[in-house]
Image 1 (cartoon, rainbow, N blue to C red):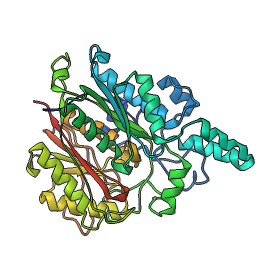
Image 2 (cartoon, one colour; image 1 turned 90 degrees about the vertical axis):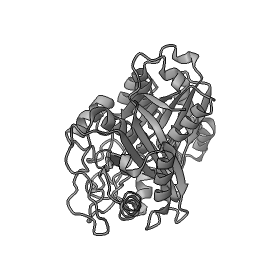
Image 3 (cartoon, rainbow, N blue to C red; image 1 turned 30 degrees about the horizontal axis):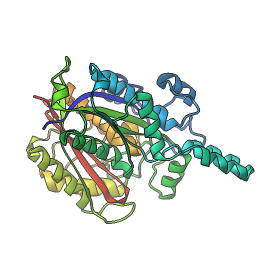
Length: 397
């Protein structure tokens, strides 16, 4: 059974919807800049890819109250766009699920409570009254979308959204659901910014993925979702789906809590598994949307695994040079970009690349390529704890 992609939605630092994101990708417009929304002592020294909208402004877009967590505001905006883009008649008559990923939950709300807790310890009662975990975001958004058949949260670090899409596809293939809105979201928080800073893997300049002189990553925020549908649902649509989710796999190299193995064992197994499921060979892949965080460890381990499995590496680039690393949202956002690559026949450049890594034989694409035949895109997402996932998007014939 094939799983089709009927709709897509995204919000990121380079655009508030799919068309704005596409325009920024075409024009090499990066969203990495000075921090102005998140209250942090590092605003002047650590850049990030923020969405330059306040919670009040996001609330106007989403329809949620501005007091809700920022992650939920972002999630609802992108998920609503994906559903509208799918334009499925009688959407609610089908068995529908919402599989959403995030890592930060409602940490922005918890941080606010913590501030008051330091002044008055009775404030901890607020934590008992309001659930601010990752699952709360999913349940809140699913309720606003009117989805009730199957709701769950995936939180596997940076591979979270990829695993959400894979799980959604499995539910369709096993005839448990007809439609799944799958992807993920994450918002900036001091917890994540300070945590990554303590690991000393943040760049104090806009990041340079896959460059010999890369220094680290830039954090970002956003949300990206796709609407997965069964063959039965796809057959009813006036607008025929352009793409399928043809392959996916998850693996773990069990090397280190916050680092991949130098040779990229988990990365290799994830890519290999996705290829096997899709029935494609390495020569069929036209473009690889690399995980490409810009850290010394990630780019080396992923690059070594890509080189090992492909030999002659196809077009490849990291769009995190545009959006920063959006953690639980990254695979959802990059799924939308992968589909845009297929639909428009374009390959996005790896911004700010200058010097080839000495350990690798290939270099990423550095200029926008247009009028390219793109039939199959592999998108990689590799997370802390060694949780590695690859997904493959294919042109629907």
